[in-house]
Length: 109
Image (tube, rainbow, N blue to C red; front, top):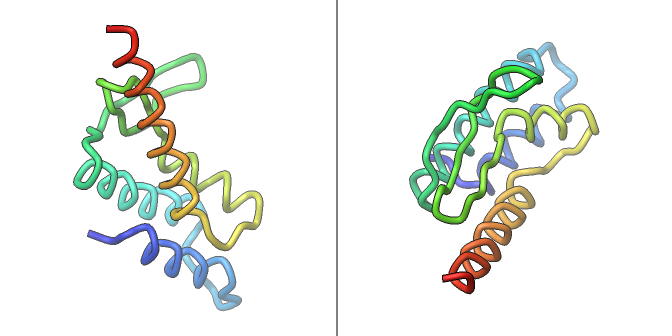
């Protein structure tokens, strides 16, 4: 399993590499899947499929905290924005939201 730090290294190298490289959609899918697996293995999320008016997307969800994250879409957005790091920041944001939501739900019980 790759950590967010290792994923950032791979992502940064891909973003800054000027040689012919994999397509952005392929990178977003592969790195997004690796990040989703990290959240599942390390933080209690599970893989789900979300369908809405925009289509169908793989996501990871913590049902207890009612938090859903979309790893592939998150990576795609960072590629579009030209960022060279994303996984450490995504990890912090997602886990912060997970913790806040768990506390909020615990307060309602």
